Length: 327
Ligand code: XMP
Image (cartoon, rainbow, N blue to C red; front, side, top):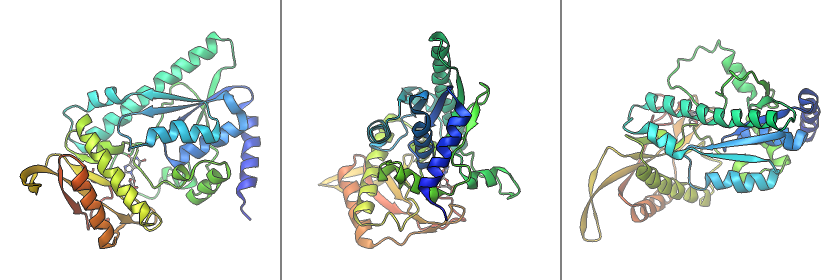
């Protein structure tokens, strides 16, 4: 008889025992797993924990505020945000290859995190306080099974998430979600009072909007995609479709232009792709048959409200052969 209250109490005790009076660092991504594992560790050891959130500039609209404001208010976690948008954009300049983008974003994420980590270690030393010894990771049971190998799936994309953190500083790991499945993690998050917008969040890739701009990633293009993505999300939520879809990537075809007409002028703008999918585990997926009126509403709002976009298209490909993300 599984009960989130029991799991929380058990984990709190284990974490306290493991940590003692040492200090702990955790990386928040905005996603469910890191949000819940961090909140759980905070519940156990309070301000011995410092959470780090790297804003790589590839986040969705409102995402940083959600972490800095809603998450911090509901959990009381001590948070450091790293403003790394310019650094990331600088390194992504001129890069169009998907794998190269992924590698750069993963590498820069680790660099940014490492810098804070070293600062915190130095700070603890200078103040004569307890040393920083532990790192929180939001590893779930399916991650444990997957990395145990044996499944034999080909490496199609180099995945980046907050699981891939530096290990050269010789930290011990705290992984309070190691025995849990996603729905259990969500239940624990709710029990801990984390806002539904975070706990119920659909999957979002670590490299963020960087792999949803087909072509070079620039600040200008990110702004366009961020607006289009926000509109699509808002309309899907309004139509009560969040449970029905697994996730809905919104993709900017930045290297494609097509002719349109708006007002009485000719336009030459970019297409936005909607990629709503239904899935159980993201290994396979089907495109979601969204109601026409919802699609129409999203299309109208995007073409009327987002600059440089004059066309919205729907991706009707299952996985396989298409992956969920376009890159
Ligand atoms: P694909 O595109 O391979 O995506 O069908 C499968 C699922 O994984 C998500 N995804 C990622 N998640 N880091 C992540 O944490 C990544 O680099 C990454 N790439 C893809 C994708 O959104 C989908 O849910």
